[in-house]
Amino acid sequence: MSVQLKPEVGGQDHTRGNKKAQLEIVEYGDFQCPACGDAEPLLEEMMDQFNAVLSLTFRNFPLKDAHEFAYGAALAAEAAGKQGKYWEMHDLLFSNQDRLDELHLISLAEKIGLDTAVFEQDLRSRDTVEKIEADFESGARSGVNGTPTFFVNGTRFDGGAADLYQIIKENATID
Image (cartoon, rainbow, N blue to C red):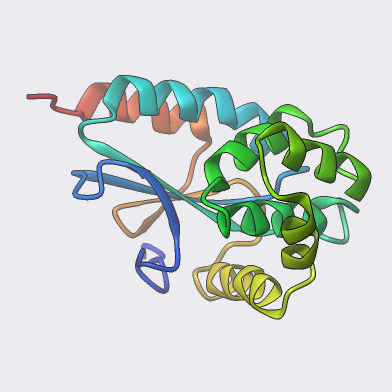
């Protein structure tokens, strides 16, 4: 029996690519997770090659017990999103997985041109925390128990990013 995504992708999500894509990928990820970091270049390559037919949504699933800075990194991505720079921060967090303490998060915010005073406030805001908790809860309801976990068109994909990339290469039709 296939496991379905709950809830479907909506306005609360961070999505890049074609919003009306034939292939909608949702990743539940943890910014400090080595496997998520390893998957990131493959996801970037997929987005570059198949941008016309693909969308990618990232939902926070910080594994706090395994990765001490994962939750703070998720807060940083959401705080950056409030200033319109979610994906810029997302990418920097993955390329700086070894430096995700708060001091470095603030320097990353500076690097992408955020108002750091607002960023620091947003790191601690109730709605930022609630967004991460909602993502995590949706992952739990969708059967996520590790990262990265992928869903394709609402159904859980039981494989890694390399498997996903291969299937998309074989099945994506680009007009």
